Image (tube, rainbow, N blue to C red; front, side, top):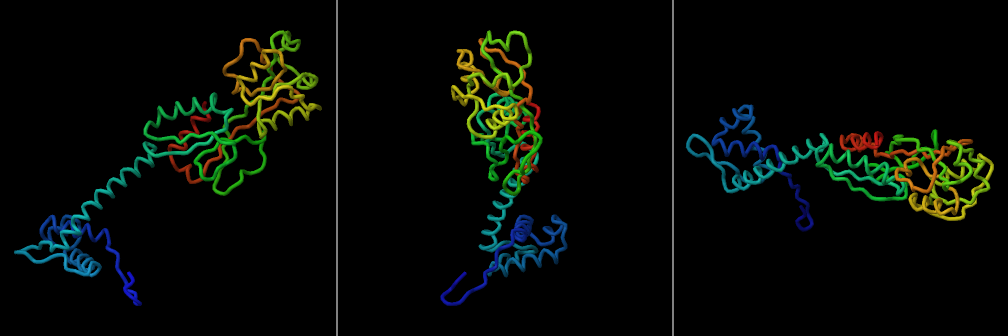
Length: 303
């Protein structure tokens, strides 16, 4: 605390000593307080003496065979009671957080993982952790070090480390792409699997926006020796199926995006090679200590 040009050292009141004062005031004597606290009377007296030095004023006065608080002692005792309740509430809240009963976790996901992965996982998580609030928002799929958990797509079988310190990459699933063909297409009539190169001459309905999901498709096509001729651009799987059903082209859609299928399309496995997007969770290292975050990871892995 600054006074004019000089500086006066100001002691901060010790919360533990304030609780000792409260014990003395409520019991009416140093001896009784010492017995309740499991201290010696001299230790209690010493704590009160130090607290009076910190406060700069007497806190107790003798009364009969015991002691009673001064005005300053009553003031600190009242504050000690409030602090005691707040500490107890904080301890309870912390215990609930450690046990995964309460709290808030932040989750970011890319759009095409929403319906078939995030939605069922979140439903299960909320049933198991009803007191935990989930801040769920759509993002571009880039790892976010300020978020507890971010869904990202990485190259199948590995790839560069996740950028940013304090993040751990947890594999959730490998999501293979399927060929989506209009009913009556020659490749759909007799086969359950098609060669990717057989689609090279077809007009294509693009089902992905630029990014790692689209890269999984274009890289597989490049390995098969061609670049797809995108006749219709689309960034939503249900709409892409509608374009295919209308005969505007063929498409590749990941298996998790085919939970609801258009009645006028046929879905076939692809090989030579099979395009796959590998979905991971980028998790803050510190957040892995929270049971709620681990519970959500488990729900995502089992969804």
